[in-house]
Length: 158
Image 1 (cartoon, rainbow, N blue to C red):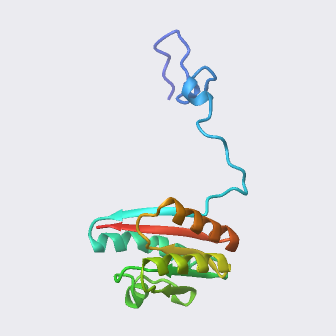
Image 2 (image 1 turned 45 degrees about the vertical axis):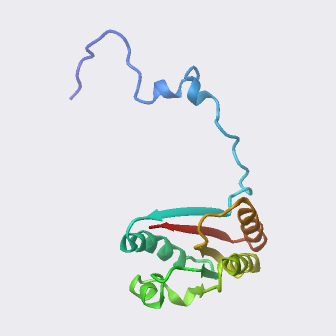
Image 3 (image 1 turned 90 degrees about the vertical axis):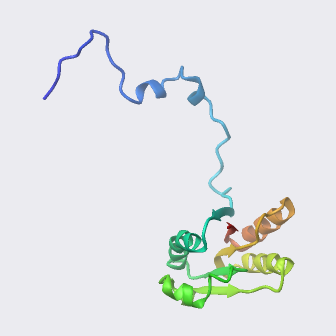
């Protein structure tokens, strides 16, 4: 059923006003577009709340990464105690495609992460390194680029 127009003025479509060239905030880009080859290899995820909630939020991410068609490993560096063998099994992850590395200390964790990233044997290295400073970010990015890998740093703010 069509309704007659209530006004003699023509109406703009929902998005026509936003897309007009005279609409200043959308007329100029805020940041330059990135080249396709210039993808960021380091991501961070801050999770807060109860341990159970944090586990539930991580499961879909880990499942997606463990189901990857990439033949390389999903590597977990310095996971918290909640991410153990039983938890991985209960989360229905492909454990035969996952390596878990337990470092001696925080410095060793960063070194292990960089080695895992740079080796090229992991498609993704998930780390639990806490807050990263500029030097740590630079090192992780360089290692990830060298190994054609991705790094996800998870911060558990419980």
